[in-house]
Length: 317
Image 1 (cartoon, rainbow, N blue to C red):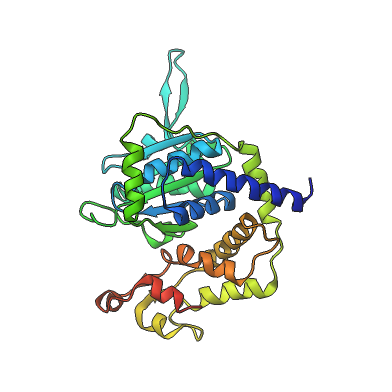
Image 2 (image 1 turned 30 degrees about the vertical axis):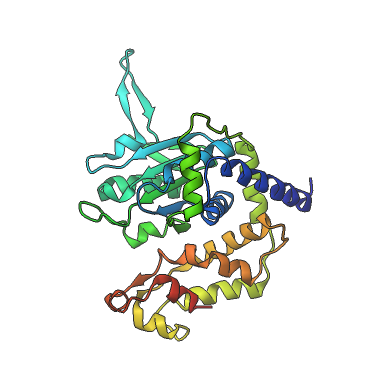
């Protein structure tokens, strides 16, 4: 099958995928679109939202529709690295046997990742980056495709361990979930307070997802689009000539080169999912907020003046 034919097939299956997810998840179309973008881009996602917005249900539904193995890890202050990675035990034959932890899955939900100490956070983030774990000197590879969707509650900050910027940078997207609209909430209540439940059908195999990821990597990008993406990221750095007025006044640290890479990959994916053969500047702008907002550090003056991250990022355009 040619790449053009494969792209057409991807568009068809992507639309079917959204229909399957919509059986269970009401509203949140933009969030679903961004999560699927990350999946086909091969990136990880940080979901930020208050309790009750169906973050866990969303991830579970996406895993079912993609036909992927799914595991959920509830992060707590007493969670140890071995609890998520796995450990060696002495079996009945008096030999050490490795028992894999929940990180060995295609799609891992790291629930409230900021509630566990840095040592455990780092163990998960190493698995995200290296696609493998090392136990007792032996490396165990994680099965592809591999995605981590981590959640954070933006309200409660007591007893939490905020992720350092270097670790936040490992996530392709940071996605903020908002409350549903009045009409959406009515539909949610109706659908979740009756006996009948919708069954989500698996539409992909692991190999298909990997093939589509490779296909997206092969999509050509015009030089001016790459330059546009890099220029946006350069403008986030307050000590450069390219920085905007808002950036110089309200930003302490800008985004690094990984932001430029993720802008292009996610723009490619957005273009492919919308049936385009190559991304343009509009695709870059469409994914910029989710790619940049967790990579830019606002200063105290921004919070005091009520300047949001969204305003700052839109000023880059």
